[in-house]
Image (cartoon, rainbow, N blue to C red):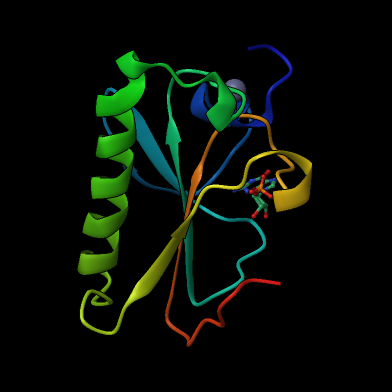
Length: 114
Ligand code: 5GP
Ligand code: ZN
């Protein structure tokens, strides 16, 4: 999608620090990290919000979750713990309308989120 920031990152029009990529997903460092490790797992395909998911995306979402766990493990955060978050629309504070899974680790995180 032409106007989408994350599509532009995926197509290399806009730079980002890429920590992993394969044919379905790409993992980038968040530009404004909220924890010592804060990365975003993006599907290569443009999907605006979780509301647009279909049963055909179940495998993709599974891949995104397992990729987050794998990046957390690689960072040595598997035992200590970490948080994964999908924000959807206004009340959750979604600002980029291309779904992305946040992975935060490296500090104690409060619950519930504010
Ligand atoms: P949301 O609020 O939509 O769940 O999360 C969007 C995230 O994208 C935010 O954590 C924000 O810091 C990050 N972000 C916004 N613009 C950029 C950018 O240009 N590059 C990168 N790497 N992250 C960005
Ligand atoms: Zn997009």
